[in-house]
Length: 149
Image (cartoon, rainbow, N blue to C red; front, side, top):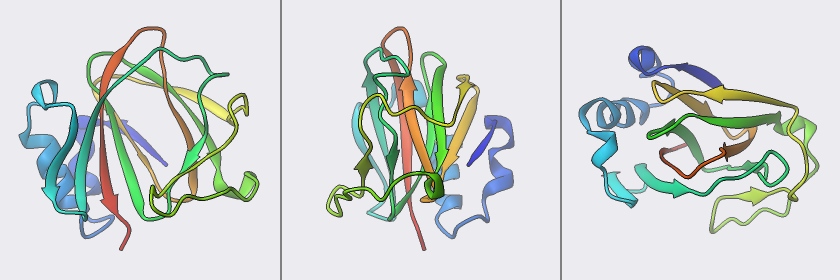
C-alpha cells in the first residue's frame, strides 16, 4: 500500500508498465468533471471508475481484495477514511473471478484506519485488503484500475 500526495504521483510511474498511462490520465484530467461510471484509458489494462459513495461507518465498510487489478484511489469532493489489513492476515475468501473481488463480512474490522485527503492518493496492491469510503457524508471519488502485469 502507498499513501502519498498527488504532487508526488509521478514518482510511481515505473511500478508497473501501466502506471504511466494511469498517472498521465490523473494528471491531465479534470477529476471533478469526469462522468460517473467507467472512463476508458487503455482498454482493460487501465480504466477509471468514478463513483459517488454513500456515508458509511467503519462497522459498515467491508474489507475487499482484488487479484487482477491494482487500485489507485483518489477522493475528489471530500476526504475519506480507509481501512487496511494485509492479505496474509485475512482468511481465505470466496473470490469472484468475474468481478475480480472478494468482500469480507460487514463488521470485520480492518487492522488500521487512516485519513485520505482530496490532494492525496492511495495505491492498493493485490496483497492489500482495504475498506474504502468511510465517510460521514456522500462524496465523489475515482478509482483507477491498473492491470497487474
